[in-house]
Length: 309
Image (spheres, one colour):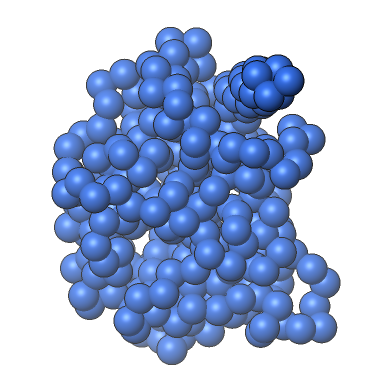
């Protein structure tokens, strides 16, 4: 009888793993993170199997004034496709521009219409190139960054690993994936509740998954770079994430249904970080989730306050 129960349990775990692996192939960019691995960081270029992806750049058609001397480079998350970007970020961009800021939304690592689906170090270099272009075109020494979700991973790689910090004065991060994420929010999207194994454990048990994804679903191939054992992950999250000279502000939500656990995965608790949860700042506001936080007028006004401070 015990043997039968063990067999049934093993079969059930395999079914869950198979369902989750199938889900990984059909969803957009995901961040499956746990506690940092012990190995030292490696600033290498990532996996050769992961394609680079393209970029979508806005026109640099605004000149900063003395009241708002730094342009704002906005890095959206990976939720939705590039055709959704304008609607998703209309509130934020309108608020920034009405406040007097030159704001430019940049999309990189674009594969099959999905943002940040390419090689993460390459996407970070795309951000670096665009930031340099903005600085050169506008004649400014520094920019401010506003990044959401997956855009924060690429942004932090640019700031920390590629040495972009001197070119950035303020980094405002919205529901950033940081450390301790278990991936349960992604399982929930497939109707899997209270799973006996986490997505991180599934990916760890299937080390070949990254190579498989690179072949059958190139826009999901960078999943392997988001594992705690990945040199890309370690380069960003081993040691201190924040960089000297950059003022960091973070806004997350206690109702985060995607980056879970909600108060752990998106909580950047390092010295000097202005760390906040939406519900604490706006207790009477309508609830927001991982993605909808970036579309809230309250969030947009808060971002302006961070940039003005």
